[in-house]
Image (tube, rainbow, N blue to C red):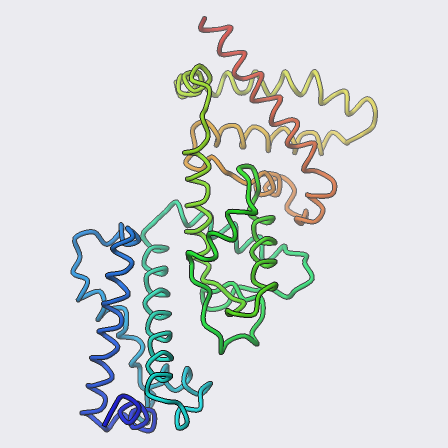
Length: 334
C-alpha cells in the first residue's frame, strides 16, 4: 500500500493509526527538507541555533487538528479541492508537498512577524493601505493573508522569491506602502499560474528586503552623513523647531496670502513635516509614510485624497524643512 491508500484512509477517519503515522512521517520529512532549503539561503536567521527537526514538528502540528468525529480538518479542507481517487501517486505526492510547504511557510511568517518589531510597522501600514485602497479589484486581509481574488485557491502560492523579483523591478526608494500595494495587486492579477493571495508577513519581509538593498546600493555623501549623525545630539528638537518655524514663515504664509490653503491645513502640514523629519533622523523607520503622518493630523483624509490634494505640497515642505535643518546645524557648529 502506498501514500495514496494511506491518505485516503486518513481523509475518511483518523482511526487508521498505521496509515496516519505514515502520513505524519511523510509530512515531517517534507517540512524538514523545506526548512533545510530555507536555512541554506539564510532565510532562518531568527531561528539560529534551533533544531530544524523540532521546528519541522512544531510547524506541521496544527495540520493534524481533528474535529469532533476525529477527522483531519486541515487535510480535508485542502484535499476537497482534489479528486484524490483519480490522482496518481506522483500527483498526490506533489499535492501533499504543496500543502506542507505552505503550512511551514505560513508558520515561519507568523513566527517572524511576532518576534520582529521592525516588521510590525510595515504590516500595520499594509493593513491600513488595504482599508484605504481604491483600486479596480476587491482586496482584503483575511486569516493573515492579503487576498485579491478567492477563486484561485486550487493553484499553488507564488514563491516569495519570485514575487520579490517581480516587485523589485517596479519599486523605487521613495515609493510608499499604498503604492506598493497597488503594484502587488497588479502583479497578482496579471498572472494565472499562482493564487492571487499572499501572506501579509511574507509581503512585509519582501518589502523590507527590497528597501535594504536600496539603502546598500545608494552611496550617500559622506559630509551629509556626518551632519545627520551629529543631529542626534540633545539640541535636535531646538534645531528642528527653528527650521519648522522658518519654513512656515517663508513659504507657508505665502500659501495663506494667496489663499491656496487654510491656516488649519498649514498647521497640519507643518506638524506632519516635523514628525516625518524627526522620524527620519532619530526614529527606527527611515521609510515612514508621509500619508500616515498627515492622517494623524487629518483623520478624515483617505489615501485617494492624499494623493490628489496633499502629497506634493507635503513632500515639498518636508524637503524644505530638512534642508533648512541641515543648514542650521552647519551654521551653529562650523
